[in-house]
Amino acid sequence: MKKESKILLLVFVILVASIMLIISGLGTHQNPVFAQSSSLTIISLSSDNKLIGGSQFSISPNPFTGTGNYTIKDNSSDDTDKDKDGVITLSGIKNGNYVIIQTNTVSGYNVDQIQKTTQVNNSQTVVTFTNIPSNSPVQSSSSSSRSITYTTKFECGSIYAGEGPLRPGHYDTDISLFNKQSFQTQVFWNAVVNNGPSSNAVLFKMDSETSKSITCQDIRTSLGNNNENFIEGFTIITVPLDSTFGGGMTMTDQPSNDINVLNVQAFYTANALDTLPHEVIVDKISFYIIQDDSGKIPVSMFRKTLDISIPSGLNQISDTEKKVKDALAKQYSLSDEDLAKIVIRIKDVSIGVGVLHDDHAISLSTINPQLGS
Image (tube, rainbow, N blue to C red; front, top):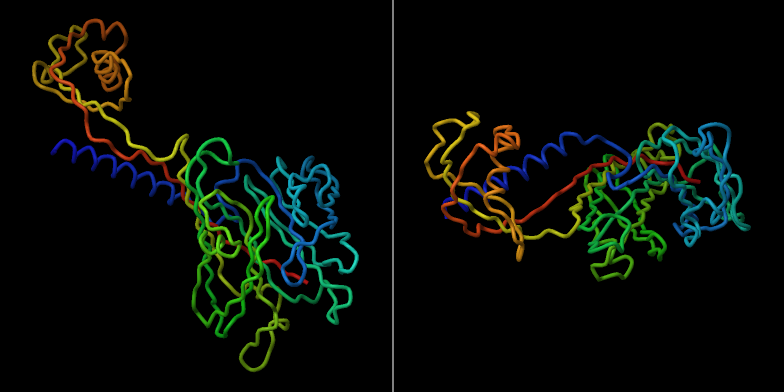
């Protein structure tokens, strides 16, 4: 049991060190580590957070060539989310800074005249445009905004084989909101599933200097999805700009650089393995070094009982002596010629304790606000 405890302790130390190394490299990026290539997603919403299809946008520079302008319309050939009205995704684009302008939208709505500037850097970047009905008494303009929008990606659930967009494993998302203002704030949020449904908007109020989280469980509840199947998409968090400051001044009176009402951060975890976490069988091998004519192994190691633990598999035929020699070669930089000069004797082989093989990735993203009409 002593040796088994040492193995478990070693595995735990390695796991903790790996997680700390990942955390130490985290920055405040706009998107999660799950992005496998650079992409840009443009979401079109009504004032009540419903998706609006058929919009058209101009992007500068062209995200595929890096020069000139590029025009994209919802559900056109370059849109990889053709089955989702109101969501345009451009995949495999160049990294860089882009200016996006909505040039047209469907009948009955005004174009959002606020241009959006965003940076793509080996990530999945999201921008959101809000369209006000044409008959609304408050018209959209570049100098008048009615809301602030925070849009972030979510990944929830398990992928068991090749059925998902990511590697097999378990994925989780936790979006944290902090009201840093001195007044109560109203917040609406809803979830949009890739190639799937959208939830109804959820309203809650946040008192001054309080926090709230939106988890995968909350997202599933809003969608009426209670199973553990993998889902991915976007959460759209909207703060109406009619909350009142102390003294009766409204938020629409504030400079644009002061509109970041909330601190919004998304924390992502992933156990991205070729298979889900599983037990690993360990062969515990006891052996002697009888002879070493290479002169590379310390003499103090000769003719005493030595132990080594090597991962193994069920119903696999293997050469135990070769396993030990391979381990010695790695530790003492032995060539095949050196190994031929070494004589070992296997004393005993036993099955060691199974350990949980795990591989966690962790990412923290800070979500920047966008003005909406």
